[in-house]
Image (tube, rainbow, N blue to C red; front, top):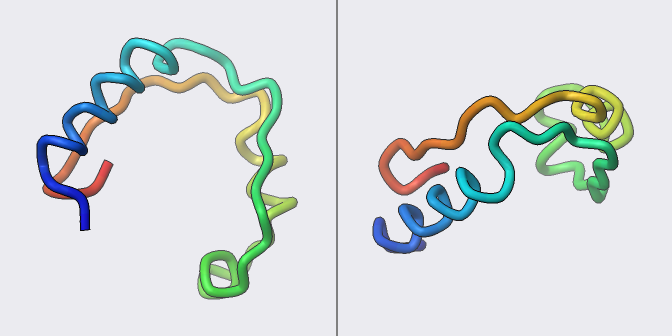
Length: 64
């Protein structure tokens, strides 16, 4: 599990390089453990995110 300092660095990096940008290409690898539990697919995830703008990046505990 990552340390809180590592998560803080990732969030800072995302703010600098991703927030405010539009996702033009999204690639997701199908994984039944990830997508199957919520009833979707990697292709549907890619389609849903393509063209969206990243509004913010933040952390909650050891998650970002």
